[in-house]
Image (tube, rainbow, N blue to C red; front, top):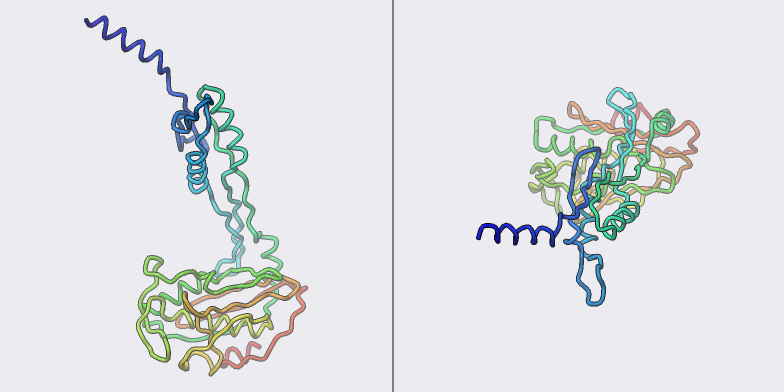
Length: 299
């Protein structure tokens, strides 16, 4: 009886055979194991057909899992250059060639997942060239003891700092700063909505957009979209503010100059400071912009 059971087991193993797997590695570590049967779609009259829906799901999964964004060169608080870092992404075309080779070979295979290099848009050489000439600046003041508002300002300043806008490109404050949510660290603070001061997530970042607007306007860069608050704000002269809201107004400008421009921004000791830099080769036309003592003296 026992011999009959063992014989039946051996016959089953021989019929099914070992699993035909595709082992995917990244830098020597196994990140996925693909089984051929899971990607086989039965079609009458055809022996083996790839299930494209399952394959596309695998491609999307690998794309999300493997992608590492490039990091632009940037400046630290002392103006020293932090070098760029190349990134990489999943190479779909190269992987598909390997996948089909595995699928129709009827044998297991182990591969290093193919990738392609993602080069940063801003490298150290470019940054060293466009951090030379200051073409605009502005400063505003806030109460640093209001910790929630100060936190929001700091997060928005961090987002716009070291941003480079190339010739012909537009800069959107909402796009660069992103949605203001508690999950991203933004807090409730006073903001102006339809002429009333209310508590809202991200309250205070309009001071950052307004400071940026005045620095950009002073450098003569073309303003595409800019709106004032429905009520006067204390940190800039009347009519010199730029209100922003995720589902509403945005502040947008376009670099029509012949050189890239660099935004340098800091929030410290109750001050929002924004500088605009570019190359010595830039042809620009600065504007007179009303502001406080610092802004007048530094013009």
